[in-house]
Length: 185
Image 1 (cartoon, rainbow, N blue to C red):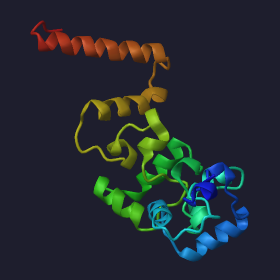
Image 2 (spheres, one colour):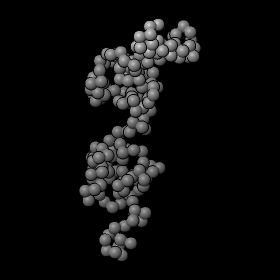
Image 3 (cartoon, helix red, strand yellow):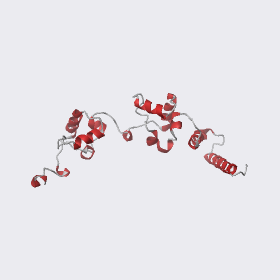
Image 4 (cartoon, rainbow, N blue to C red):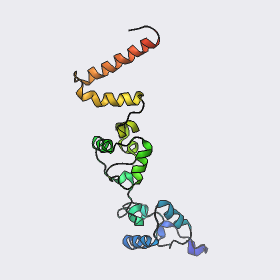
């Protein structure tokens, strides 16, 4: 249709792209470092029309991520396999880092194994109980730090039952409320 109108624009469904391996080899030769650079290249007017700007759509079965497409080897953290939370946290505890700044420096140093996430909150969800818990450093006892400690102690409690644990926590909370309003114990 674009040829008939003289615009040169062709609908994406009518475009014919290079085979995946050939297109990927071409993209590798560009030396682009990340997805943002790829997007800039695609809008620069330099991209040949037989190279798709959305390779994940055109080569959906062959496409393995932009690290593979660009040749950087970088893999999205969603596609990586990480250690289970307890193992990853034990590894991080052994590093004896003191704060989040030191964690950030360590992550950027190139020493962090790929199976340890730089952003544990995004990977482990509710298992992640704060940076202090992740690093093994409690600088300030707040609600999250106490709950994390209690959660870790749960298997070691003498009563052994999670119902007893929950009841003990509830009773402690009720006692704190009574003390705050001056009712005593």
